Length: 535
Figure (cartoon, rainbow, N blue to C red):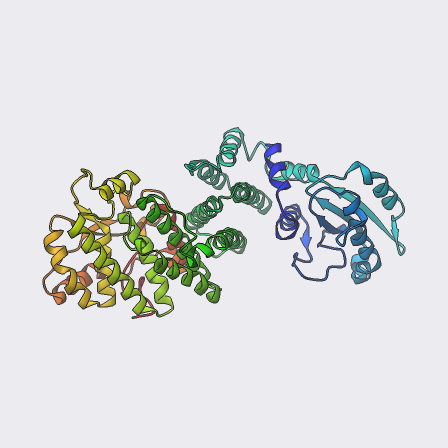
């Protein structure tokens, strides 16, 4: 376990990673933060200032080993930082702060090399008094930070042997193409189940352990070039933590919501890493490698799923950035025409998420164009080549359909069921009239399915296979007259219009899209949930 933690710590950057980790550890250890690390701020040598009742703690944070260059020969040298604290920062402390014990700590995720040990000792011995104030200067290397984590958070009691094994597997297999989610899912589920409400310190300790464990996996995955795993971990943590808050009814309690915000920031961080990597692929059709035609479409829908969920999340408070991500999704669709033909039936969930996001920007015409293009292409593919989105959502079935091998009879389709609901929500009568004969005659034996979940079943929604374990499946009838179809569809929708979930009540709509992306579910659809801006 120690080696796993040490490897993780060694990978952290000085800014926005190692500094924030140390800040969190010390705050949970009883210190109060007087400042939060901000890149670009003038700091006069101090990265973080904290205090408790007895002392003021000034942290100088560096990355990597402290050698001769890092000691006093580079612009970011340790000695320079310490001298700045002595000459300038000490004058910024209040008289009340100066009455406390002053401790200066140089912390690094490396070690103090042998070549500067004499320099370090000499500096500490000659700087025990700064302008009449006694000062303690300490060095925390990577082993000290690991020890701090082990003693206070990832100890044997809270992180026992089975979870250590799961963590090792979650880290070891990050480079595998068939990475199993069960490793990190077990860790998150188990650590959340261990949380008690006995005292704030115990709660913070458990949540810090959960946070560090997930961040270790995310960091390893990202460093291995697979930031999608990092997104998956952060998504699952959000889903399960929200479920925990829902079961305990903790939504109105500040300390629990503060941790939710931390988990949200992690989700945003790893999505941003992924977005920066995938941006060029979205805007340049020459960059996407040639795969098997089915695999190509699967990967394109996967990209669209990640980016659409991320843009929906950003829309809450970073709408300009959300629009940039959304426009990249539209570029992806325009640059790769084969993307219109969805490989899996459940891919309608990704398209619905995109339509809902477009509606937030009042881009209703864009929704109609996308819906119309996809409907026409799927009609032509079926009539001309008997191809359709794979109902079982398996790669093997998609390949068989594409190669026109013998496959099971086409019996049900959520894709067409939800397409029909989109038509009703948009009141898109011309498209209905264009495809109704195809749906009624060519797909006469195919059930056009939709699925609804009641509020009293919400807890199941946060788990895998919820669409099989809960809710109600309904077959949508196809009528020759649009008015008859619309009346029946709206009658069905009216039975579920008041089924609000906790994320609706507490204005966290992005969670539904995150859940649907992670599990492959389909977002709820009616006039209120799919196109709120257009009603």
